[in-house]
Amino acid sequence: MREGYATITTRKLANEAGANHGLVHYYFGSMEELLLRVLERFTDRIITRQRAMYDDPTVPFIEKWRKAMNYIDEDLAAGYPKIWYELQALAWNHPEFRERVLHVHEQWEAVLNDAIGHALKAYGIDRKRFPSEAVAALVRTFNMGLLLERLNGFDKGHGSLLKMVDQLLQRWEKGS
Image (tube, rainbow, N blue to C red):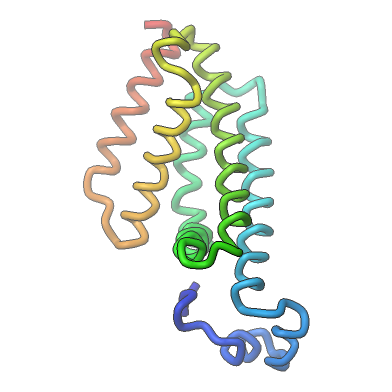
């Protein structure tokens, strides 16, 4: 997280881990492979967390949404979005990594599609007018924008935006 993909080296990584730098190449083959494995492992943990949260039938969607939005700061502090975005950029120029990064994206897509689909159904939202896949894409894009801006130290308007979405969800919770 501190160094970023562009400046991290096997020597820096090995020194931080207290290991011989040759072991990085022995076990992972390259820094890119190591970073992709970190992303995949990190994603598995967060996807498990998100699925458990969204799959709880006793909690209303609005509470799940609020919890998910609170995870943004936690995930930023842990470094996940930074790793995720840096490896997306890596994949733009390295087709051999694109498939693995795309797989991570598809995992997020599946979690959100399921959660949004259930929420729209529970709220009685017209699914022809607001297809769950389209709403899930909007939410993914919304989250990506929040994360990117916060990585750049910018959060102007985020509080107002989250409040507006929360008010909309409150109206849906009341059935209006």
